Image (cartoon, rainbow over all chains, first blue to last red; front, side, top):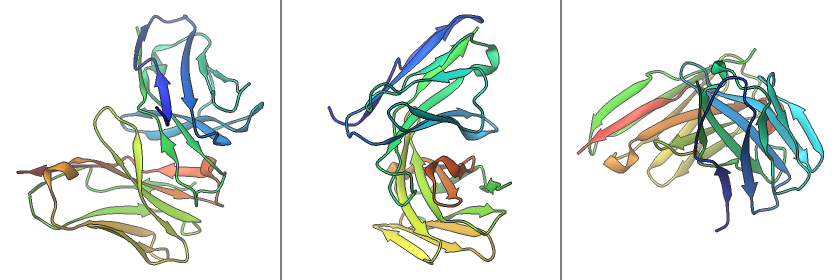
Length: 114
Length: 113
């Protein structure tokens, strides 16, 4: 099914563990984004990527690592999870950098760090 | 630093009512403004995009207006339906890049049958 998919849908982990959230899009969009959504903060950009092998930091990158070896995939890794990283994570994609093009969001991954 | 505020945080209305959701931003030098809808447990869906040179955009029962000079945008929903129940977020873009989108925290709308 075409679109942008995230996995897993829900994840529970413990502090200190490494966790990888997956994002896959079928449109061959150049730009991909990772956001976290928290009560009281709204959506905040973690990392983004303009193309394969090109990534850059967003507003809240600390504690996260991304890679983009293929255009369609943009995994987000929490190297050593902390409770403050409990959040809902959204992946998004766009065909261009400009916001004249719509941003398409995945359904999110709800992550709980115990 | 650009800040985007949406008031109220929650709104409950009876079905059929026309309603207005508000969005304000602190820096008027925006490139464009978008309104998104978010259903519970889902991602965001783009509803309307208004360029900085435009005053409004319409899609079906939705009409979004933009007043850059006053730093305000409104989303007007006509003849509301229970299916309109969702959280509505606005986001402003600075200098055109999607990585520069600044989101408001949203208004949670409940339309009661």
